[in-house]
Length: 200
Ligand SMILES: CC(C)(COP(=O)(O)OP(=O)(O)OC[C@H]1O[C@@H](n2cnc3c(N)ncnc32)[C@H](O)[C@@H]1OP(=O)(O)O)[C@@H](O)C(=O)NCCC(=O)NCCS
Image (cartoon, rainbow, N blue to C red; front, side, top):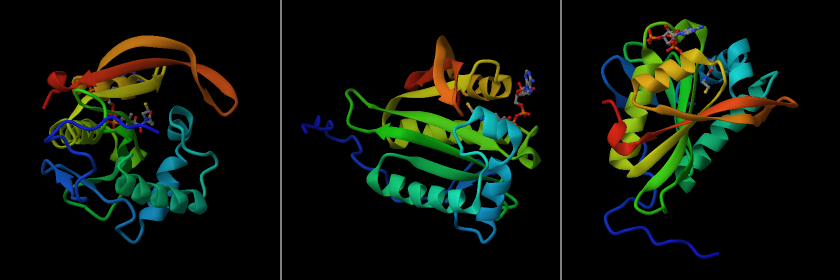
């Protein structure tokens, strides 16, 4: 397989993992706190998380353990940068997940990725995910050199759309029966953030 060489000065791998915070939300390594597996099972089992994301349903402890392994592998092979979402003043309590998936740092003139996120109900309604998406998108643009981050959502997922748009993402179109969820193909919005559009 031939790979496109990355331009000089551009990252070719994810940097060593570190936390991201704006003082209100904290993005940290999932699996680092003792109750993370329980919190992931709880959050991923929320009906709208099961409906609107690609998590398995029903969601088991084995699914959470497998997910944590994939998070570690994704960071080390440079294909995924996934963080636990916490309130900064309660860093052990995992409230949700935000991640850059399908990271490709090799494209020219910059890399690309897809963003995904969910919050357990306890974390909602206080703007935490908007802060989390802004922090992670800033990390992607500034530290990974991404020129585009793609966002998908099932048509009608207004909370997800509001979060994305508050960070500068734009809805670009509608993919009819764009993706399958548990045996059914559903219409999807597709959107994206170009690096220069990021609302910091
Ligand atoms: C998407 C998600 C993370 C947002 O969580 P949150 O930040 O706590 O969301 P909020 O409840 O604060 O709502 C976010 C925005 O959507 C708005 N909103 C909420 N429900 C809405 C509805 N039914 N219709 C229209 N707008 C709605 C809120 O008013 C808020 O807007 P504002 O920031 O301009 O005030 C959360 O709803 C979630 O995890 N959903 C299930 C998983 C999911 O859909 N993930 C995204 C897949 S693409």
